[in-house]
Length: 392
Length: 142
Ligand SMILES: [Zn+2]
Image 1: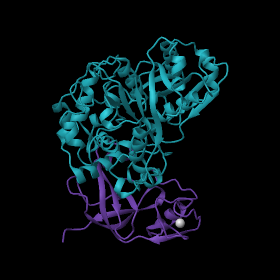
Image 2: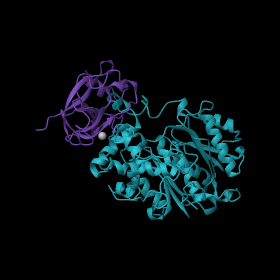
Image 3: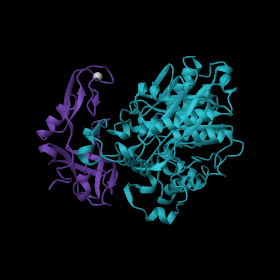
Image 4: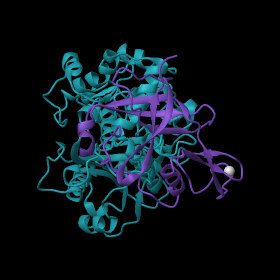
């Protein structure tokens, strides 16, 4: 990716979204309609007409059919129809990577990357779902949901390295505080205190309800094009310095399935190789990152991401977060300045990429002063995953 | 009374996992082992990840296991388990079978009575449609 000449380098030229609502909040629109609305909003932001879009990129096994999307958006020729294969929430930066490859290679000029979720009208992610891979090996024992599977990893991490209830609480409290400045967040106007956190119901020990991502409906999208074209568009382009897919060896269905990943990486996020290649490709180190948006399906998974990406050594993440290093505005690298999946919305993490763009445009509601680089990670503890470094 | 109600949906049987569950119906816990290179594979796979052989054999598991991790489920994600709350799900390992972990339940403990490293003994309970499920009992401390 770094090999493309500067004028051909991929940039994000526009972002857009629908309103985010709590699960079941849309009775008048479905997933397809929300996706179209988000893409139209991103195109407007980029100063483009919908008929200038010639590529679509998605992930997480979208229910949306590309031929109908081309028809609905009035795309004269759909030159790239891409989707990340497997990995569900692992894929937001993978979809971005596919879009970047498409514009850098000249296969398409303006690619819309999108994700739409309207669980109120389809299946609910937090519930039993018989089609999950390897559910035959876990479902008969009552292990039905991602929360339950990932709690198993968090439990082992707590055994090996230790974290207290108050240390874990620091994560949802930090993200909820950021969301209180963000009117797009579905938890806007509903602050969280440690007392309220500790009094909340257990979903699956060690996760209370506030340790689990929101269940929301909504869509978001962005337009990827080359720097050369983005120069002629109204918004400040945000460069995709690196965007890669990847995951560690022998993970299989990992913690979302049978839990047979290798012992030495059981309490990691399975993103170590991805992190290493990402920083090498970008020719940057963790110390160069000004702000990051981390996939936060469940609070404790932030620990694994911080360690896999080299922000702390193994087992040190609970103390790192407790010390305020991830908090806005005073931490050395603030995380999830929009509120994340715990407090803004759950759109399989594509909203984290949008927040990265806002930071680098200087438009975040929790702006990191002078931010030049943003790390965005896709879902951890699942394979394949993805991550990106954006910059201006 | 089994640890979880028999209305909890049972395994969907396919050509890859069928031998595992057939052996369970005979109250035998077995793991897939590659006939080519002896690599242990769980859950069952159609191809050996080490040597790509499609020849499989089945190896009996020991009757004792250790707790690798566990959770206590307090909120039901399926109607069938509402009356069973809170219940545990355990991830066990078999020291003699490297690389294999099995998800199951421990039938004789309450919250607070389960810890990583606990020694367990295999037992069998009936599940959905008469399918026998491998579960575990925590051994009394010696
Ligand atoms: Zn083999």
